[in-house]
Length: 607
Image 1 (cartoon, helix red, strand yellow):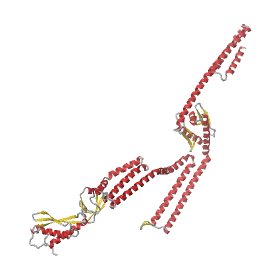
Image 2 (cartoon, helix red, strand yellow):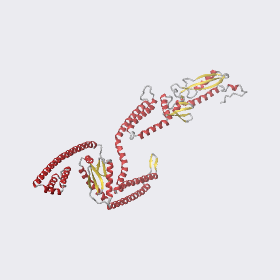
Image 3 (spheres, one colour):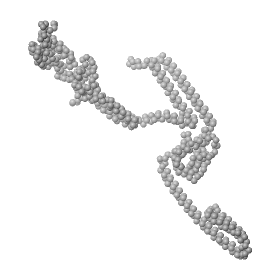
Image 4 (tube, helix red, strand yellow):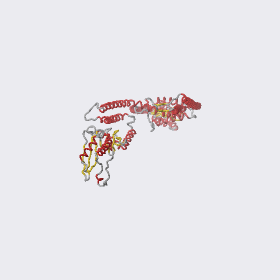
């Protein structure tokens, strides 16, 4: 009877506390039942025989009371344990909520700087990975996902099983058969602003569709279809090449026929620039060049088409297209971006151009003596204009330089420095001549047309530039003299005062003391006055320069206006001196000759 009651109490306890009962409480109840059943049956029989029924009933009631007390104690313990567990769960939930809120704040602050890594399969962006996982960056995770998708799509032994998931405490694996495609973490869900289950569901749909599509693309019939398209494109390209070559051969024949009938030579001002033969060759060359360009253009179009037929080479097709389009696009974009700077350069150039025109007009007015400035000579006008024009153009270059394409690059600046260094090292003589030319211009030692003498060179100045001066001698020799040489040499200008004061030409002769000096003076002056080009006023004059032992030295001086004719006038003067002395029966022989004369006759030539 007691065992039956104990069994009933045990089952009631299990019914009450299971399945919510605390494990410790269930354990204590089990021990109590075990102890009750472990009592020996022999002892019970002996006790029954030794005790009366009343005593047995009392013992059973006491045992029941004891069991009720223990059961009540166990219920109280269960309530206490439930309260502790509830408090712990509440604390964990609060802590998780705070952590989640903190992570959301951090993620929101990073959204503007973290665009995520796209998972791209054959130019199709499936989704983006934002968060790292297990020490792997988002880019590593994206590459692994793409590799797994491609591997699964190429494996024909895998059945078309539905993608399934495997949940863990902190992440969920998305699997295809026994292969893990990717794992979705709580961080991934926070970045997307959804729960992990929602993210997994959307990713499963995307991956299922993509893998099914790739499996269809990698099927045998699809590969066979692409191979047929590949062959078809090659055949079409070959036929297009043949057609282009045929058309250009026909065009060449038409050009040759046109040459024989109507083609004429290109003549520019009586100069035959291109005859018919050369013109025909030029046209044929241009046609051949056009044919090559068209063939290359067709090839450029066909190669990307061939590459795009197969998914594996589709990226190569896009790269090939970018190799061609990107440079052209870069040039066009650079041109469009450079248009504002080009307008600035044009405005600067126009402004400087009209400034140069204004300075040129003023210089011409001064040169033609229509505009007179005190202390500024007309011959300074052109050199000054050249200097001002150079400074204006230098100023223009300095203003335009920052707007030139590539002016800020190191290569452009290095080339500029290199060119400047070469010019500075190799143009020292040129610069010295240039500076000397301007110094000579403003010193005004001579002008074009003047009759001058530089060292041993005598002649008229026919050209004067900033670098050199050209002189034509009396023998019609053109001598080019660097301006730096003129600066370091003595220059005699015979024309400087000839027109205003008269240029004095002179020559010397010796006569013995037996000829009166007055007679010599008279003959020399008469010879000078009868010389063409010698001025009567100021009158010629004679200077006696030396008194030697046997003779006297006379110097005739005469004024002339035309310095250019100085050699001819000097020659005529010497001829007249001989004529007038011979007419006066005055021998023009050295005094030393008289000392050795042996009775010979006079040396005056017979008329």
